[in-house]
Image (cartoon, rainbow, N blue to C red; front, side):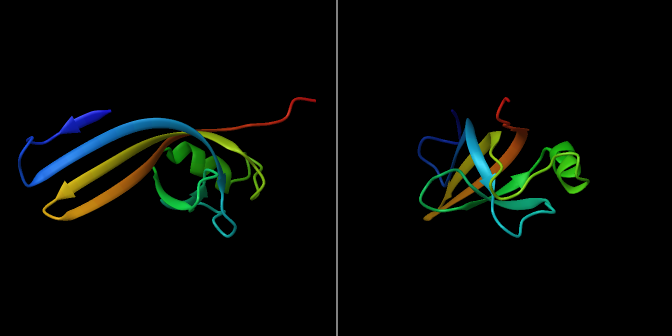
Length: 102
């Protein structure tokens, strides 16, 4: 976890890197710069895809995927607290398809 900003100021930011299993929600393939995902939590979320190689392989069919396909992803999460407003952005920085071994 990385924290930036003054301890007592108008802006405070926290950045985390996490690894998580995820699935792409229905209607999100072909993938764009933003993609709706589920990691098994209570609510789906939108991630900004920084791994353009992943979206290119997904969109060209090099990665065969549907809504049942499970991926392992690396996410960068950034939270900013400015004034009285808390915002969060999630970036998908890398992804790998998980496949069952025969």
